Length: 217
Image (tube, rainbow, N blue to C red; front, side, top):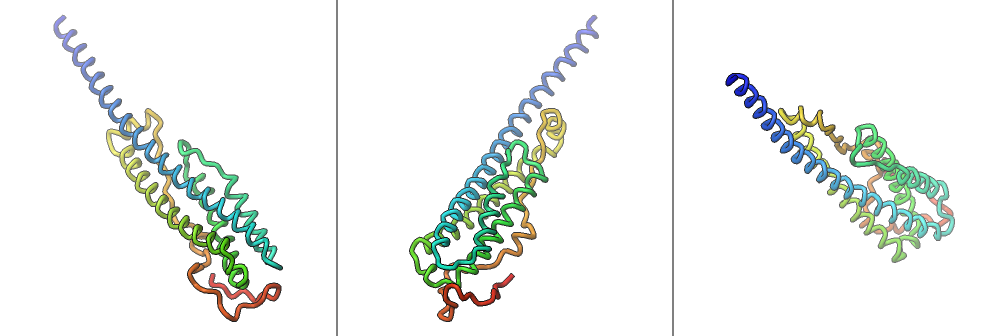
């Protein structure tokens, strides 16, 4: 009888111990997951701000006489594609991250080409609206880089937590999954390098007579 009671006490004790550890692990992993989701939301907010600024930039550029329509169309289509992708931070898979990054990378490329072409329109570059949008876009790009880095740091901490033992066991039981990282895509690596601070060349071709595009790739 005493042996049976002792065994029962040991079993109950183990259950309580494992349950307590499980609750502690769950709370810790859940907290880190929320921090990662918040970091992702901050990334999305900066990308949305960039999208809004690009929309304003397109409207400003449309006012320039004989501006290259093909370049504008590429930006408009890339912006529409990028804004159509919605990612739930709770279901952020490597495939969805890749899709999101690819769309944003294509928009970055299209924007880069637009800024290069804009160099040929000194009257456009001289407008206050265009200059202000350039400054805001440059600032937003820096903020995007910062928020992406912060997200990667949060994701690294979270992933380390859920993959270490014994948390790995609890993570599988509670459904916690690893988060993908931001990595430089091929599209982002080939975005034209445009220095917003560079003054317009004095020999720029007049509107409607654009010189051949010799922008760096």
